[in-house]
Length: 255
Image (cartoon, rainbow, N blue to C red; front, top):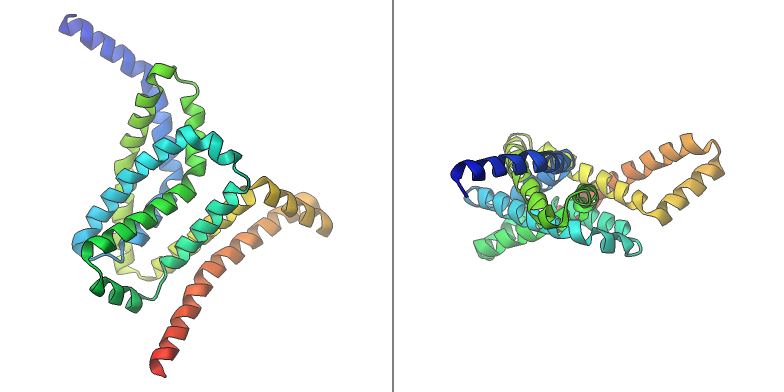
């Protein structure tokens, strides 16, 4: 095959699959903002020289995880209460990210630097799993429209192209956290809100929500109100538990 023929085939193939790649990139950028926040919150506990490594390792392994979830999403969503498990896992991660700074530094002094890095990467992967159900479902819908022989390559290309943007967003968030530590609490509260949203996405929990709204009256309006109250309560719980741990630890040290 001549170089000209190869170029024409490549251009035709690129033009054919580019819309699907762009759709996958857009989905992961649109739904990946919370992933970037979680990565930044997890990596801020690392020494400055390890933060970039934590961001890129977490982002890269997150691509592999989301790629696997695209093809396992049907099985995952068939597991009863999967959204509940993901929501509770994300709420737990939000609490872990707000652990007492003094205790965290004490642990990092005792543990090897590599151990601290991989602990952060594990947290990022847990958060990625919890928050990637929606990403996986939307990406799988795009993948189903593609020919079987090109599906893997196109999905992987879309996820890989969107990865630098998530890593860049995490790096920017790390800078913001360094200047404004309050953002740590706001980010963890956001994870709590997203965790509640996941809980409410479970069909069984959603049915309970509708029953409560109907019992109050004015179903649709009250369902929205109850949903917001549940999200606010979960966000407050994610903040309250670490705050009380800090208060208790300080009281113990003072005593």
